[in-house]
Length: 193
Image 1 (tube, rainbow, N blue to C red):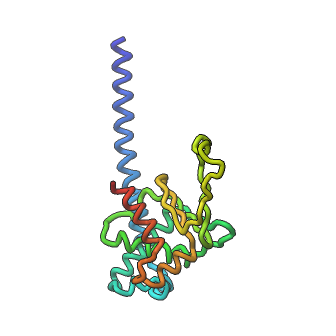
Image 2: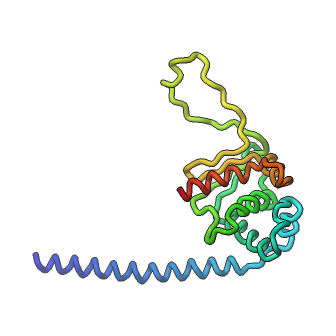
Image 3: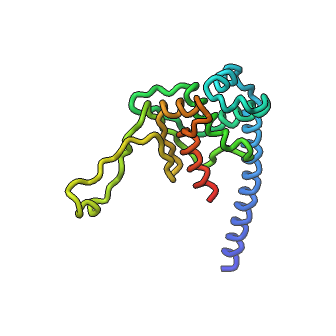
């Protein structure tokens, strides 16, 4: 019995030591990968694109714009992006959305939106499919019809946006109508509260 306990203790200690060693090795590998990705130059056309299509960035210094583009690249590469209802999602479209989203996190260190995993982009307003509770319909013969949406931020790490509204919101930063700011602000709120 005493020998079995000793064997279990030795095995647990060996596994714990292997975990600590492997963990530090993995952390160094991930840190080196992040540093390599951050060191990659930003394509020059990215800067021209956001200066043209996201005029709010014109108020930033060139260094701040470069930092914004690095954050946008992180958002583009760490999330799964998908065009819906036939929308062919391009890098330009992703960059215009990501740059707006990263304007909200420009002063926050670290990865922008670490809990966000998927961004779905529709060509225009969409009608969200909802899971309905059948018992809620008992009081009415006509359940409420869903209305078109411009964006949604789900608590499970999914963002849904209408492309035409995202582009329109980027065009005039002073009009107070920006679906990307609105939905990504929800994402920030859910991550920090």
